[in-house]
Amino acid sequence: MNYNETLEYIHSVSWKGSRPGLERTRERLYLMKNPEKKLKFVHIAGTNGKGSTASMTANILEKAGYTVGLYTSPYIFSFNERMRVNGENISDSDLVSVTEFVKPLAEKMTDSPTEFELVTCIAFEYFYRKKCDIVVLEVGMGGELDSTNVIEPPEVSVITNIGLDHTDFLGDTLEKIAETKSKIIKENSIAVLYPSTKGVEEVVEKRCHDVNSRLIKADFDAVISKEKSLSGQTFDYKGLKNVKLPLLGKHQLNNTATVFAVIDGLRSKGWNISDTAVREGIESVRWQGRFELVSESPTFIVDGGHNPQCAASLFENVKSYLGGKKLVVLTGVLADKDFESMYADMATLTSEFVTVTPPNPRALSAEKLAEYLTRFGKTATPCKTIDEGVRLAKEKAGEKGAVLAYGSLYMVADIENAARS
Image (cartoon, rainbow, N blue to C red; front, top):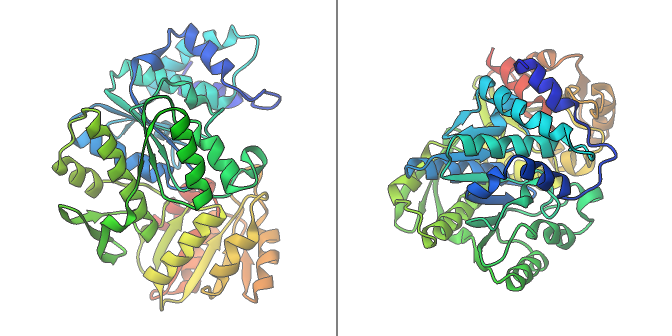
C-alpha cells in the first residue's frame, strides 16, 4: 500500500454493528505478539483537557531525556498527528509499514475491528518499534471499554475535567460518566484527578479504594497566575517562578496543575524529571485549536470547543482576553450538539454571527445554524465555504475588532489555513 491507500483502508473500517468491548483489541494485539505489554504508559481519560494535559506531560518527559510516544485524537491537520514520538508525527512510510503489518492480522479475525481499535493497535506497534521509554496515551471516548484500556496498570492514570458529553454512550449524569472513565484506574497504581464535584470525586475515590491505588488530586490553588496576554500567561508554582505557559485561559492553569500532579506521581515511581525539564516542557508546549491566536488585525482566535463545559470556559476567556473589542463569531456545528449551551452566553458578547458548514457528514448546514442564531437577536450570515466565512468575519470585525471561530474541531484546520493566508 502507499500512504493514500493506507488511510483509505483505515477509514474504511466501520464501527457500525460492532459490540462494545475489549475482546477484539486483545485478540488482535495477541496476534501482534502484544507490543503494548512491552511499553509503559501515562493513561489519560476525561471530558475536557485530555489533549492539553497529554501534550504538556509528553513535552516534559521529552525534556527530561526520555523517548516519549503521544497518542491523541482527533487530528487537526493530518492523520499522522495522532501518533507522535518526541513531538514528531509518525512518518507516511512508518504508517504504511505498520499498517501493512497489522492489516492481514486484523483480516484473520471473524469479528472485525472498529477504526479506533485498529488505529490504537497501529499506535502500540509504532511506539514499540520506536523503543519509547513511555507513552502518553489519551482515551478515545469513555474509559472502561475504550480500546486503549487493554494496557497493564500504567505508571499513572489521569482523570481530567469531567462534563456531560457523549451521554448516549457514557451516561446522563456526571457520576455515571466518571464511573466509566475511572475504570482506567488499575490495581496497585497511582491515579491523578482534576478536582470536580463531590459526586465525581466520590466515584473516583471509591475506584481507587477498590483497586488499592493511591489518589493524587491536582492543587489548583498552588498555580498562581501572574500575568496574561494573547501571547500566553505566566504563573508561579511552589519553587518554580515566572513559568511561561503558551496556552491561554484559566482552565489551562488548572490543566497545568493536573500535569504537576502527574509529574509528582511519576517521580514517586522513580522517573527522573528535573524542575528544569518541567519548566522547559511547559514553556515550549503547543496545542492547536484551543483558544489559539492565529492572526492579528483583526485579532483572530480559533477554539475547537464543542460541549457545554468548553463553552463555559470559552465564554470566560472571551471576557478576559477580548473584552472591549467588537466581536464577530464565526461558527459551524454538528447537528447533534447542544446549541443552547454553546451559544446563549456567547451571544451576549457578540456583535454578529457568520456561519459555515463543518466538513463532516453530521454537520448542521450554515443556513439552518444562521436561522437558529437569530433567536438571540443578532444578525447571522450563512456562507457557502469556510474561506468565504473567514473573509466575511474579518471584514465585519474590522482591524480593531476580533473574530472568534468555534463550534467544531472538524473545521479548525480549514479556518486556520484561511485565516493565515
